Amino acid sequence: MTFHEHEVDRRTLFRFGLGTAVAAVVGTEMALAGPATAAPSADLSWIIGCDSWGARPPASPVQISGNTTNKIILHHMAFPNVTDYSREHAVQLAKDCQDLHMDGNGWADTGQHFTVSRGGYVTEGRHRSLETLNTGQHQVISAHCPGENGNAIGIENEGTYITETPPEALLDSLVKLCVTVCRQFRLNAWDIFGHWDFRVTDCPGISFYAQFPMIRARVLAELGTPHSAIPARRWPDIWRFVDSPVVEVAQYLLNDVGYALTPNGSFGTDMNAAVADFQTKCGIPVTPDATFDLATWEALAPVLGKDATGLPVTALQFMLVRKGYADVTASGSYDHATMKAVQGMQRLHGLTPNGKVDLSTWCAVVGGSVREAYRR
Image (cartoon, rainbow, N blue to C red; front, side, top):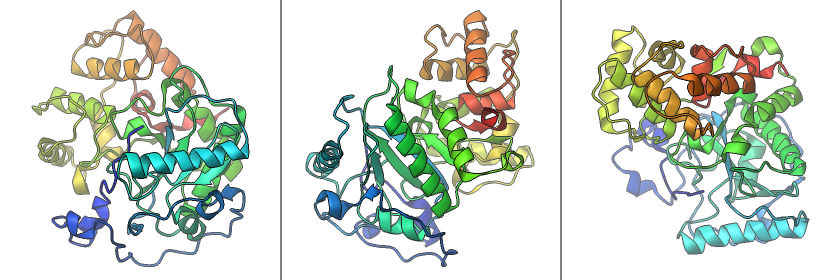
């Protein structure tokens, strides 16, 4: 995957009135927002910290976000799928990754917060990630996903998972790590997303991504969250500092209701006014930074049936192709291949496989989480 060093903790910048002075704060630690409630005590001894694996010191001070952590973003590393499952290999992996990010890319430190090896060993990535996980208040500003680096915990998973899936040892440790992050930062199983939900990338891989409903369900069970607490839908909250395939879907849908946007996945300034105008016309509160919240998504996403045509169908087909449904073509016509792909997506997320694209199907297609997926 590709990281972008110092790629914005912009919500923090705007909170403190520093939106025009990004360069001035790079490399410094920002003043924090008000104190958060203390996190529950946690045994983190099973995570191999930077000191334990012999990390180099950061090239510049690690920054702490003033934001509230609101999600976990999972990645694959696009490294070889090795069969060395030892602790020694996990340590070397951590060193290689830090060297790549610091020497190859010129970054201050490892980009992600944590790394899970194929043998199931978890290492700390960016310095102070363990410290801030322990307190559960404000996370380290990372470099794993532009636009989300100040409010999302980034977890790298060793390997490449376009056609293969991770070993069980990796999945078991990933679930344990996600549970710990959720407890410490007061997140939920439905707050787990993939890198490509917020960035134009092939990460976390088609095959790995198809396991996300299972991973979320395991995390939910470990957390002991009652089914009654699961929201009907948790959409990806794209906003004006995120570029991704999900943004391209939003552009198609906004275009369909009259806004002249080019569907290219780049959340440009032209979308700011369009989103605010759409929200106003629908009687929805205008969100900061043109954020697509639940109300915005659910006012925008149209129900599609077998006779549907037009830009919403093109948007649907575009995303289905991204998710690995190779028989689908972005033709704008709801054909048989599209219906079969929709049914496959519905089955994956526990929805009734009727081929009708309702709100829950849309949510699942664009990378969100639906309540039905937890009935497993």
